[in-house]
Amino acid sequence: METAIRAEGLRKRFNDHQALNGVDLTVATGTVLGLLGPNGAGKTTTVRVLSTLLTPDGGHAEVAGFDVVRQASEVRRRIGLAGQYAAVDALLTGRENLTLIGVLLHLGRRTARLRADELLERFGLTDAADRPARTYSGGMRRRLDLAACLVAAPSVLFLDEPTTGLDPVSRMSLWTAVRELVADGVTVLLTTQYLEEADYLADRIVVIDTGRVIAEGTPDELKRSVGPDRLEIRVVGRDAVADALGALCAGAVEEPSVDQDKGVISLRLGEGMGSIATAAAALEKAGVDVADFAVRRPTLDDAFAELTGRAAG
Image (cartoon, rainbow, N blue to C red; front, top):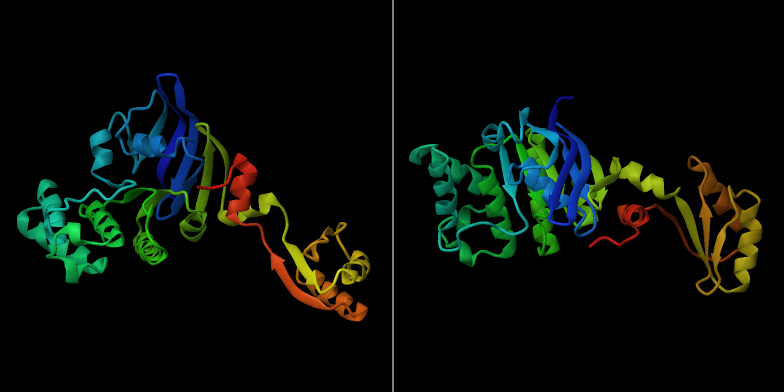
């Protein structure tokens, strides 16, 4: 696959703080890379370097085939950037915001108006197009901000925590918009504190901490790195725990763990569905009264905590 973003050994220092300490990453064209990490890990600094807002102290990066330092103007012609807060003029209407950007980008007034109308419709803002942006909800302002990034039809889009502060419905609306953009061939680099967002949107994930890449892979690969799927069984009554353990141990991959207070047994699963069926049959044969029987898979939150030693957010 073609590469839309490539960074090798990026370094950036602010006074006595080493924000980036040799960051490497690659993003294939038409995919989403989720850039995760604790606060202060270097996510926003990485985005600012790749979008030419900061000059790196060392390393090399190319975006859309152009060097971010030597060919910064060419990079800027091909990218869009949405920061953590919507950068729209609250006094202008939605239509005026987008038209103004088109004019500033030398599209011509007529073309700018047509492009504004197209984006307003795409992001479900047509009915509010002639209202001042200050009357928009938070989700509407974020959609307008994303539309503003697309006026010049960029091939690469940087989204730096784009759904911060949004309610779940507005967040899902923005996720849908991003999915549609990627389907059209746009490449997205996304930083986020919402791990379910990265899980939903990202084709690959890079985790950084203290300015270094500490892990990368698909969401499923990172989840599997934490550990295997487990079967969690909650039985009815304390006495039933011992009976359940006796029934399960014979076919277990490893010794089950037990929470006596909750009456929950956690059992590592083997490959395939056979181990689930075997466990269910063993419990039924032993006459164990089961209140809950469910497969629990590691989440991206589990992987993040394991890799960084901290919870997300």
